[in-house]
Amino acid sequence: MTGEFRCVTFLSDFGLADETVACCKGLLLRRGVTLPVIDISHEVPPFDVISGGWMLAGAVLYMPSGIHLAIVDPGVGTQRRILLLRSGRGDLFVGPDNGLLIPAAERTGGISRCWSIERVQGEMEHVFPTFDARDIMAPVVADLVGGKPPEECGEEIPLGELNRFPLPAPHASPGKISGHVTLVDAFGTVRTDIPWDLLGKLGDSEIKISSGWLFSIPVGRTFSDVGSGEMVALEDSWGFVSIAVNRGRASDMLGFKPGDPISVELTIPSRP
Image (cartoon, rainbow, N blue to C red):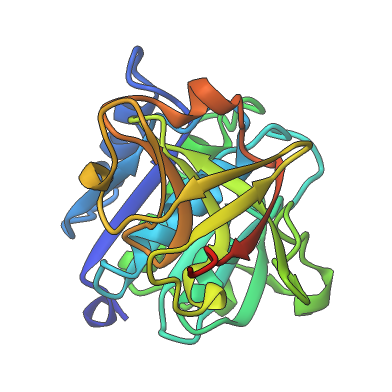
């Protein structure tokens, strides 16, 4: 099985202020993992499954086939399941059963099979209830890299039993597309789950944004299509509607956070 995969990726909300990430990566090395370990991010806001799931989904499309370890896990140590998913593209995803893995698996061909990882003590002397990432998930990743079949890592479970991503899919109705904020990036750009192609050909139009109040934003192709400090709606680098401020932070101006509902509708300027 090793030949199927070209990398291991790692995403978490652990931060980089302590030894947590290093412990997990060191264990992978101790267990013989020689594939590149790519850090997607360890700065996911704590407990933010929505942002973490969106980051993972945005990254995997640009990765070769791999094994993806993702941990944003408010339920660590509880009876929530630890999952191993196989996607249609052949990738394997290891992480908690809280919806975190779902968008990335769906973007790589959908979930083909899934297993609930058995809590089997590995090489560590103890399995600590507050560090499943190091004591359970990372050893499973190492076993998979080493050729262990997913079927031997746990009990297969029906796809319908999985906890879904916390946000429902965007909904289109006449003149309006409703979705959610999925991520606020380091520049304060507000990213959404509304596909840009649902908006049609905008030309020089504006769009109306609604999230408790209604306001209009000019449409641009780049941030600099508006003046410094001005807001612009544009297609982000993954094909979704985003709201930015040229040389500023849209999140500070709007107060949006991941999970907030947001709707978009077109307003075509009248011609003289």
